[in-house]
Structure formats: C-alpha cells, structure tokens
Length: 326
Ligand code: ACO
Image 1: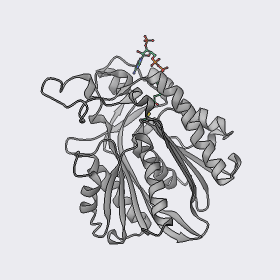
Image 2: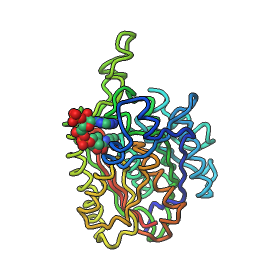
Image 3: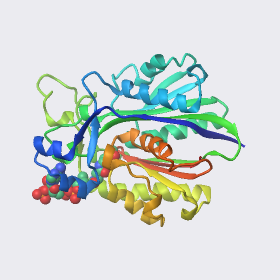
Image 4: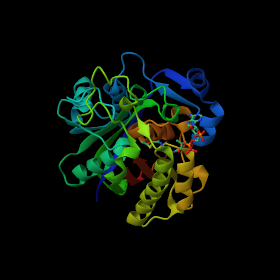
C-alpha cells in the first residue's frame, strides 16, 4: 500500500530566550502564575532581521538533511503560518527560492495552531492520489511581533520558532495512517487579531491600538479547546482502530499543559507517553508540533515503527489530528 512516510524532521528556534522572570520585569505577572496556569518557563523570540521565512528556511534545510533528500527532489512546499513575511507573496515562495527547491510549487496555509496537521493532511492526500511524491511541510511562526506586549493575558503564552517534515510516498506499512481536520468559525472572535487585514485596516491613527495584537477570551477558549482537542484524539483512535495502549507517544500542540492532560486522560493515555516542550518553547502556534516532533526524535523518544499520535487546536476554531506509524 502506498503511504506517506515522514522521512526527515528539523526545527529551528531563534537564539534569544525570554524567561518568565524577564517578563516579570516588563509586565505585571509572575513566574509562578505563568507556570501554574500554563506550564511555560521560557520562550524564544526573533532578532531584528528575522521573519517567518528565515526561520522556516533553517527548519526546512535541517529536515531535508535528515531525510537525505536533495532540494530538487521536492515536488511541493506547504508552509503553515499565521505570521507570514508579507500578505503577498507567500512565505512558502520565499523559502522555495532560498532552499533551491527548483521543481517545487509552493503555498502558504493558515489554520492557526492546527496549520501543521492541516498541511500534513493535504500532503498525505496529494501523495496517495499520485499527484506528488515528495513534499516538504514547514510551519513557521513569529508570534512575538503580533503580540501586544502590554497585555499580560496573551504576551506570556507565545513564542517564535519553526519545524519541518519531509514526506515521501513509499510502499509499506509505515507512514500516515489517518488524518482528521475540523473547523467552526462561529466563535472566531474568542481568539483573533482584529486589525491589519482588510476588515480593520491599519492606519496612522490605530497603529498603536490593542487591536493590532492577539485578542483572546482565555476562559471560553479553554472550554472549547478541551472539547475539540478531545474529539481530535478520539477520531484518530476511531479511524485507525488503534487503542490508547498501542500509542507509543502523543505529540500534542503545546498550548497549555492542563488542556493536554485532559485530552490524554480522555483516552486513558499515561503522562509518560505525552511529549511536552512548552516549558522551554511556549506556544509556537502551527510550528509547535513539528518542533516537538523533531526534538522527540532527536532525544530518542520516537523510534522506527512507533505509533505516534498528533493533535492540535487553534484559532478559527480549528482542530485536527493524525496517527503515524513512524
Ligand atoms: N500574570 C498574572 N495574572 C494574570 C495574567 C498574567 N500573565 N494573565 C491574566 N492574569 C489574571 C487575570 O487578570 C485574572 O485576574 P482577576 O481574577 O483579578 O480578574 C486572573 O489572572 C485569572 O485570569 P483568567 O483568564 O481567568 O485565568 P485562567 O485560569 O483562565 O488562565 C489561561 C488563563 C492560562 C490563558 C487559560 O484561560 C487558558 O489556558 N486558556 C486557553 C488559552 C490557550 O490555550 N491559548 C492558546 C491559544 S490556542 C492556540 O494555540 C492558538
């Protein structure tokens, strides 16, 4: 059977680190509040000349190197981001050029924090339909530049970074076993960036307003995230017929430790099977899962033939999952 195998992973985190203690100095918050509510200790943030494509380029290059795939072998590049370099052209096109993907088509997608898993589903469909053979999926986010740093409720949650995977169609039992994606735009405004698009255009008058940053109704989002995330992990089990005990590792979107715990509990997954890096990296939106995947693989937490569950939720709302035989 033709399956979409993940044959390489890579990630990149900007050098600069902001700890919770650093944030204590610039806003009314405490390390204790942040750690207890979220599990976050620190986050990476970009330097002056770094945009989404610069981070994505580095992650993509590392993924190609681990896969042993030459740039000209790549047929298609999907870049999941809600913080692209420009409205146009796409960050995917910038990365395609800098990486030398001479044969590849390139497109950005935005499903907020679910963007990587959405991209994985598209790549899997392209490969199994015989449209493309080798696909690079990159997720890259520079959330630090879309935050209102005067708003402690959101400023403490996010970080910058990029992760990437190379996917190739191969005959066999290893690869993506199932994918699931869902959306509900009804409550779009519980997590959104009001200004800077075509709905509320940025002007000299509103350029410093709070609407240019992320606005979040944390409590409402928390409730909905628990439901959506739970549905995503259950779907992966239903679609594959796997049981929780078959899963070797769960690599979730790293938004909040309590939301992750509740999804793991819902399917009876013990905490030692859950990979967490949000203490070090915070919430990097779409980039969160591929960064965690690469770290888990490099730390020896993912081995050949392991059953790996991925699940995400994000603005939209969107939610998604995938089950992968590594
Ligand atoms: N430091 C100190 N106090 C704070 C901070 C802060 N950084 N932020 C908020 N507070 C205060 C509030 O002002 C409030 O004070 P009050 O009671 O005097 O009004 C108090 O802490 C409690 O605030 P809540 O918002 O009710 O805190 P809650 O327990 O709900 O935790 C949190 C907040 C962690 C954001 C939680 O709601 C949550 O995790 N929600 C889900 C958010 C999420 O996952 N976001 C990620 C985005 S989804 C995606 O990945 C795109």
